[in-house]
Image (tube, rainbow, N blue to C red):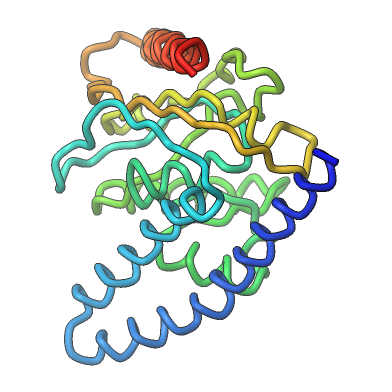
Length: 253
């Protein structure tokens, strides 16, 4: 019986996501276009604000409580969001509760109706895997946009953790930050792997915890490896803190 309930719960989420992204998303972009005829900055703020709202509403409509610890950096700060990766839900989680981040994504995503509209609005850069020359050009575009104030998200583990534990960070995964001296905003996530586990399509109604850390300045480190190890340590400590909060809540319920 519980599996049947989870199935319909997931179906409700998927149908709602399609309606919001494709249909409501089209309306948002149309309104944004009309506003842009008079004020382009206001148009972008409107659309990006709607994307942030979607990130939060995705969890509220599912009845999933999101506990947030820490504060967002001041507006105008240039940074790269670096987070552990537990679930496909990490993306709307970070968009809704941390910052409307852009993505370094596969070129194929640019062909998905609805999603490609928002990828473009957020300033995402699409990469053609296997094409070294085009990948290098895409990374130059990422650096250019970072300097213009666009925030990107990186998951240095390279894949989702099946049990919530922090996997090793890929070598040179924070090279953009170190080489171009872009600050890092470490983010720790706990519980998303229980809501939507890796290799599963079934959503479970469980709480999610997120901790926003202090900005990390790459100028304070002598190598990318040293920076990478430090950021990983910060995220691990954050996950331990969040896991403890989750255990306390379970014991008190």
